[in-house]
Image 1 (spheres, rainbow, N blue to C red):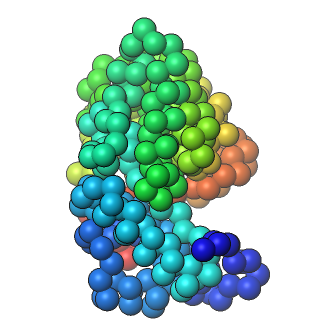
Image 2 (image 1 turned 45 degrees about the horizontal axis):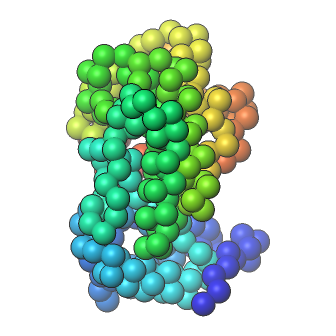
Length: 279
């Protein structure tokens, strides 16, 4: 079956909305209720978790059904994403190569370990029909005290992070899959986890621009970028995900990033408890 992307000029408002939404899937297969949900809301994109994966055969069947039905409903090819970073954050854990953590690949004596890891992960994803890896993390983590990052990051300096994250992104892309750098503009300097609470970062603007943002500014060839749910007080009073100042004025207009921007999970406590999912 040949998949295409419908021209936005031919999309209805409902179809356009569906194309900027990425949703989770409840289980190992698509039931009638979920198929109705896709059709009613013209859903365009999906994110997979460990709950969706049993083995390669099951995942291939799920992806075949998902692609065919989404294409039938929306006349477009969906992005299907996953957090397959390596180490403590993996969703595919059977019939695949278990990848080392970013910190491990950065610390090893094998100079191109992040690149090789990216290639392996990308190939494992694609053989099951998953096309977008929500990785790598670009946080600079000086003391490993950051609960959001920890071994998910590549190291303690902006140069090390940029070098190894660039290798990983190239590996993912060379495999044929897509990459997503995260979490802009960098949340390495907080000790709070946005999954459970709202981090507030009070670093001066110049420090954020020249330090936290450094890997992002220099890795614009990534296919997508994910926003952070932290508040950066020197820029705005609301989280980066909700901030026109950070995402439009800084990222789009000043930095010049013209790729896809994806929010972090909108059901994380940093958003849910303070702003509400509906708003």
